[in-house]
Length: 331
Image (cartoon, rainbow, N blue to C red; front, side):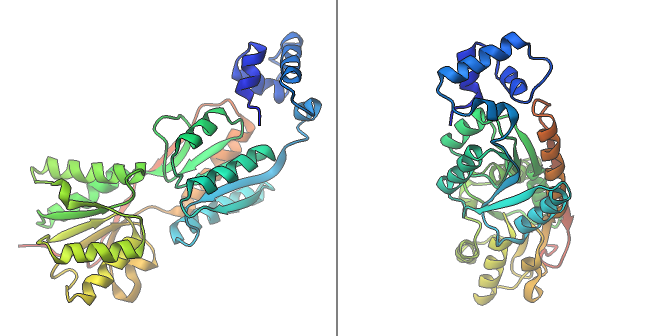
């Protein structure tokens, strides 16, 4: 697939000029339009007239890439997204990638080839290949729940730094000083921001925060169970866990090991879902409304489709602390 950037380089014009030409902007002079057509012909691009007329665009299709559709938080983002897009006659094509970067790349490359109207990536798996694709694609791409530091793209996400800070602050205010953290994957900007906020809250309270107190996980229940074994062998009074799945796994395992929540150890986590309250777990958590995030994502995508060259939109939601019974106040 020859990108608009390559066409621009061949024609000796800007990428923005090529984008305007393909959308019939009146700001592109006939002479420049002819240079672009000639460059496309020299590059061996077929069906040039169809590209200018938009015949190659699957204009009603939007690709949604999600790491794990079984997670309620992500499913509710898609529900919100779909509710808005369907009113505008867009149809979603879903790719459940299982956090596999190769699967994600295959899906978005197919969307490019088939000229989808847009791409929404929920919990994107960052890779060099993906960054290169996003730098060159002409299809609107919205990132949700994560972002890529090196790129200026439309993003809808939670203020994860603030969430991490609030989690540590709540535990500190309840008298906790030795706090372990089960984070998400090392290559996740979300996990890193949640960890940074947590660390800074500890620093601001003049409390120690050793590297060995932080364990990186894979967001699964099994990872939470392994973390429970780590907690059971140490003398932490509290733990901050990066998502609801890991938290549920950790708490269930701690209970099996004879540890009481919160009498023996306090727990706070990110993401509110039935998991954090199943069987009466009552886990205190940081949360944001995923359906609202999905609706916001759809509105941004619609705006980007209407105005491809507009300024990038960054929508950041501040998480809310939901107090339950999993945090004990130490005397």
